[in-house]
Image (tube, rainbow, N blue to C red):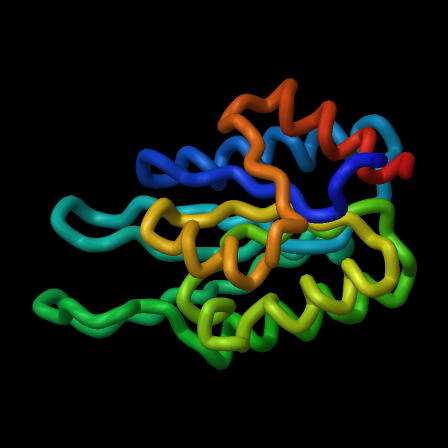
Length: 171
């Protein structure tokens, strides 16, 4: 059996998976790999405030802010669902070009609820485009149910992830 088409890393510390995916994407692009997808960039703000969350849409080299400022005392989710869907639309256009690999910054709450990048992940896999994503540890069981045994858990280590990406893209 060849390489699996859906690989994922489980994020441990804050921003750790984001940095790994950014490093992997940069190295793959330097090798000439055609990527679609988005990498999350957390922009630190003043002390005591949550960071701003941006998505770097790879194929277009465009940045979309996906966090919203809910005020200093807010404890709700800061994700701006409309901004996320806008980024998804940009990535969807990049899928039209038949990339070698789709990288999704996170399979998170929106994806668990059937929104966000979930439809694009399904579309990419149906079209034979391998997908790499990060999954929060709290969401691994529900992600596994979505993946239905077709996903490969990858170590949070750049060389191992790069090796998987190269094999999956070549398959």
